[in-house]
Length: 196
Image 1 (cartoon, one colour):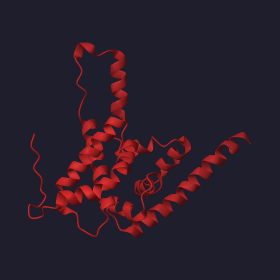
Image 2 (cartoon, rainbow, N blue to C red):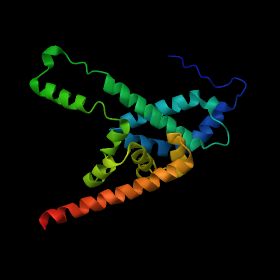
Image 3 (cartoon, rainbow, N blue to C red):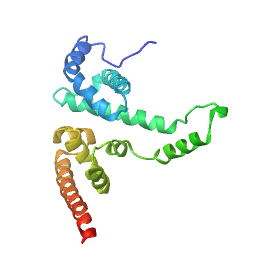
Image 4 (cartoon, rainbow, N blue to C red):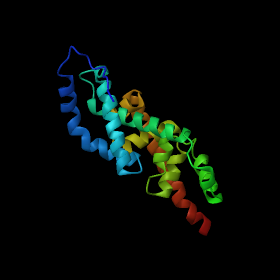
């Protein structure tokens, strides 16, 4: 298989610069990919795919901008694309191997097929109360909080990932935190109200 790249032939140092810039981020990319995918093998595949796409599109990267945020955005976009593709692709199983139990499992999987990639990642949060409270937030607030708080991106990186101004991210994170606090406080008082 031959891979053709869009890297400018007039810039012979592009591959070396890309390797120099991306190498220190490899472990962080792999950690993030493991947080997004279900297996270590899928995480490695995702990082490889993201790095390939980043290298092919390296000519679009503007010097002076945040390379880390650019690369993490590509990783996230590749994950979303892969996730959506797997949701659209039906499973291939021989007809005579299908049992009643398999049909029930497929129906359960299809009922979650319309969920977004962010919603899927949200379900992996450890605490059910936090997941429930996060699910109540408006999508813009939930997404900004997810990247800034759960994934640990800076506000500038989150702004780049979401393709919105930094001030918008600051506002969404702040309001999201307020609503999350209120929702968690409400859920904390609910069991006491039921007892009384």
